[in-house]
Length: 542
Image (cartoon, rainbow, N blue to C red):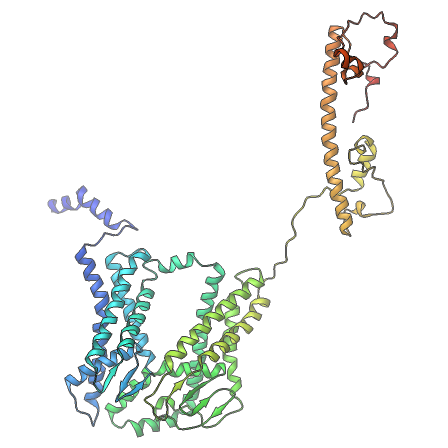
């Protein structure tokens, strides 16, 4: 027991614990540990995704009534199935299938993001630069795996093109890994530091609006499916008899559920979608044959006049966006710019969703499945920008433009009376004259300015008043200096030189300034002029 306590309380052990637990300074992993973490981040999603696809294929094949189970066949088919999860178009007997399940794509992206986050914790990623090796390892591994699958299935009944098999897995896995590392490695914080606050609010509002539009599409799809529940049951019974076929059909419908919801979003915004010869929108309808999938049980057979009412759903999404940004700034124009940024993000999101949801369908009667991404994007932007802009403009505060504060000495009756009591202050260099005290009531009596001319007059008054104060201060200094000179002359018995000589007169020009002579008091003319020492003869104080 003593040895255990001594080992636990030894300085060396305590220091090691403190260094390991110090926040912000994780222990640097060794080269082997770092390599293992990167290998796990790259290979774990590959192995897990392939295993899940192979298990599903085996389950469906084993439970189907008219199929023969083959382990090798399942393992071979799982490769193209894994590519389909990364939105790689497949070819079956020379026909391309581009409508791929979006739910599988969401699943593999979430798996990659979680694996990258775990790897970042093991190797101690703290900066965006630390995230680069993880993202690169994940993207390269997925690209090489796609290349391997496309090469192995070349010439087979089920395969994929080499270029798309390499690029699409690498692109989607890299984006998913970056999303998983955005928080731990500071990628999101670095992006926020380079963005304007209004842009950040706009991005958040755009994410909220895109989710609201997706919910609107889900509402439309759910409503149509509930109204067509008997048709869905008939399609399950007729096209997927038996438990194995029914399970396979159910999994197929679930995998394509986000595709159907995206179609409902396109329908609610207005432009709609097309499946082969069928074109459906809130304002138009063109019928034709559709595949017998239970997922499409809610497809209408004719146009209904009440369909435009469903456009209130995207309008409600726009109102939600405007309501979420109504208090971010006192300036309504700033809030309006935020709504525009949100609408732009939502339009881009609709382009991505529409592109992933559609594609070729093996040249059959339902080929192609298309969503007009351009029209849907513009329509979504309009449904967000117009209602959201109105709510953001009128639902928030309105700051009045502030005038520049200027302190003006407003001439009032009191200042006019003080000026009348001291007339010296009126004799300024600007020559503004006196301020008359009027009993009739004017702008100077009330301190208000009715015109711009009155405002300029008051400003001139302040300037002249300031000049007058400066002049009075200079005169006071001059009088003080003269008083000191007079006191000094009185003590010495000398008189000041003649003003003409001091100013450069005839005597000063000929022989310089006259010297001071003693004041003997014998000069009879000494008292004829003003005595500078007599206070009565001093100039008036200014």
